[in-house]
Amino acid sequence: MNTVFIVLPVLTLLMFDLGLTLRPHDFGMVLRRPRAVAVALVGQILVLPPLAYVLATAFGFEGVLLMGIVLIACCPGGSSSNVFSMLAGGDVALSVVLTALSSLITLITLPLAMSLVASKTISLPVGNLLVQNLLLMFLPIVLGLVVRLKWPSAAGRCERVLSKLAFPALMLLAGIFFVQHRETIYANFSRLGLCVTLLILLAAVIASLMARATRLSSRERRTIVIEVGMQNAAQAIAVASSPFIFNNGAMAVPAIVYALMMNVVLLTYVGILRKQKSRNEQ
Image (tube, rainbow, N blue to C red):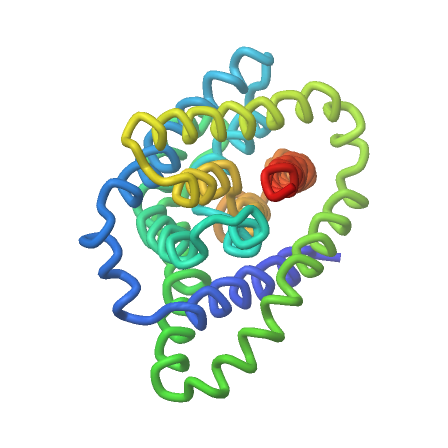
């Protein structure tokens, strides 16, 4: 089975769902709350990729696995981050805007960052990457936004269905890749799992410290921790496995392991926050 025919439609639906949650005035948040937006984007766009490269190198990864680790760090925020923000008592509106902004910004930054780590034996077709991201990310977001403006009631119904399908679809995708590349995953899981878990934890700690240093509210801080720590694994898989770009299933393995550990870490984070809230209310 060529999993690219599963991952590409899944990514498109996730981005369309994101567009359905947006309104044009949402982007005014950049002007209304510039500190929160700037801290999140700096953490996600400028801090995370170099951090991933340093960790991958420290763990001795090279070739496609090193590129796969950096690739997941170069991707935008995960499409389910607004759900985690809601569960964590964060700012859902800020989460949605940050995910949309990072999805648009990484159309440019992802090719630039990946071109720096592409090995001599693995070329990066930048043009194909830009075209694929425009078709699978930018256009679905715009289409979802247009549907929301033109048919708000239908958009609301559609968004409720798609939001429930997003996480199961990602887990199905991860499961299929796990079966197909189980030998590579088994051979590298302990080292790779530790590497990506450290990446998630350090990203969350750095994001929290940046938010505290800029005196953001607790709701904004929780949201930024989740946004910086939760990357779009579906896009990483799409870029790695697409026959138009890398066409390399092994490069998608870090994204599969990342998707698993990301949910474990963030669910633990949400659980801790909810326990703290429960104790404070007693």
